[in-house]
Length: 310
Image (cartoon, rainbow, N blue to C red; front, side, top):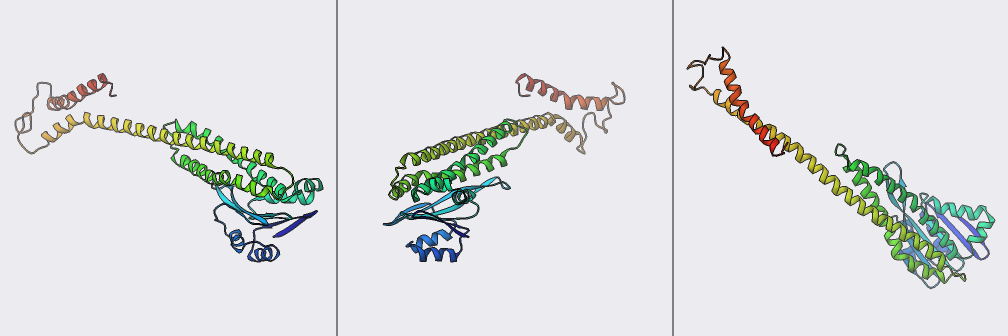
């Protein structure tokens, strides 16, 4: 879908979900480089800023949050700006770009304020998209607080949640990092199309980008701490379980040895062939075997408790 707004000598062309025909029309109307036009149709181009004599081409990636998967995916925004034109090419997922366009189209005061120059429009579009990062960052912080309560509860498994949060943070970092790297070049190149000094405005966006990056740096460090903590606690729980099982196995060794010896088909003291002792009654042999089997186990149990192994 292609739509336009013209104010004074500036025309803003917004192309949503571009098709080959839309790109061909733009190529016939403006002196854009064919490679840049091809980049507009691709969805996985690296962010970049190309400076030409009469215009600047900017390609950026912004995150779109997927509620179902609780992850973000990158959505591409391509922009051409010159002295008398501003072109945005994006998917319908980037609703904020369409929202800024519709505000300019429907409200005269907004239109007059925003469309003083292509650089001014660039500022408002980038500012809106950068501000959209902060609800996602807030959700990251809330999710990390929820995970923290679970991490320190050894009864709960949080490995999947930790990996999901780690992936979300990595995807946001992959989006914000090129913004930090390209933002200065983009604003310097775009300033020549505006008689109005916009460095302070773009400086405000730069501060927001740096704040977003700081939040992501802190979140990445936090998730690494939680991951290590979960690993340590899980390992400690496993060691405790193995210790208990080992002690139980150790305590059964005397009974196992006695049972194995008296289960052999040979003559043994107190066995059937030599006659069972009866000085404690008809179950004397059984009582003696139980004492021989469990006496050492009781001694070992007392020793383990004394050494604080239990």
